Length: 278
Ligand SMILES: Cc1cc2nc3c(=O)[nH]c(=O)nc-3n(C[C@H](O)[C@H](O)[C@H](O)COP(=O)(O)OP(=O)(O)OC[C@H]3O[C@@H](n4cnc5c(N)ncnc54)[C@H](O)[C@@H]3O)c2cc1C
Image (cartoon, rainbow, N blue to C red; front, side):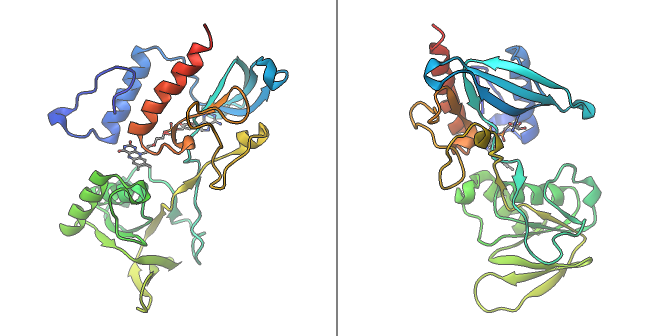
C-alpha cells in the first residue's frame, strides 16, 4: 500500500485496515506538502488554443465546503484525470427499492445494531459492509448472485477469506445464488438465481444495495473525449494519454482496479508528464 517512497509498517506485518491505510495516505500528503484543493470539484475544463499548440487548459472548479458555491479557475499545462469509478451507485430495480430503508452507502454501522439488515451485492463494498455491520451487532444477511471467489469482481482474497470465516462462525448469513425479488416495509423477498426453488421472505429493517458503481463521465463528454464500450476512457496503454493531446487518465478510471497496480502506473505517468517540463 506504500506510496511515494514513504515506508508503511503495520503491526505484525498484517494488511492494514482501511482506517490505518487512510491515516498513512494523509500522513504522506502532509509530509510531502501536496498541494491539495480538497472539497473542490472540477466542473469544467477547456482547452486553450488548438491541440497541437499545447497551450494547456483552463480548469473551472466549484468549492463544496459548507454549501459554498464559489467557483475558481486554474490553469494547467496537462490534465491527468483520476476521478475514480465510484460516484454513481448502480440502482436496484425491484419493487420497493424506492423505500427510504434502502441505502447505497454505509457510513456508520452503529444505527443498525440489533436490526435485520440485508446487504445485496457481490463485490468488495458489499462484503466489507456486511462484515462491518455484523461486527457492529446487526443481524446481517449478505445476498450474492454468485459464491464469492478470489478476484471475481475484483474481490480481494482476504475479503473473501474473512467473509467466509464470519459466515462459518454464524456471525452473518451468507446467501449465494440468490437475488432480491422485492422489498417490503418489514421483509425482503429473495429468489434463488439458479434452479427452480420458489422465492422466500426473510425479516428485514434495512437494505444496503451495493451492486457496484458507474463512473461520472460528464467531464469527458464536455471535453469531447471518446469512450470505450465499457463506458470508460480510451487511452494509450503505454503513455496513458487519451486521444486528446495533454489529457491523461490514471487509477480506476484507467481500469487499474487495485492500488497495487494503479500506484505503479501513476508513478510512470507522472514521471512522464514531469519530463515534458525540461
Ligand atoms: C470496499 C472496497 C475495498 C477495497 N479494498 C482494496 C484493497 O484492499 N486493496 C486495493 O488495492 N484496492 C482496494 N479497493 C479498490 C481501491 O479502493 C481503488 O482501486 C482505488 O480507490 C481507486 O483509486 P482512484 O484514485 O482511481 O479513485 P478513487 O479512490 O475513487 O478516488 C477518486 C477521487 O476523485 C474525486 N473526484 C471525482 N470527480 C471529481 C471532480 N469532478 N472534481 C474533483 N474531484 C473529483 C473523488 O471525490 C475521489 O476522491 C477497494 C475498493 C472498495 C470499494
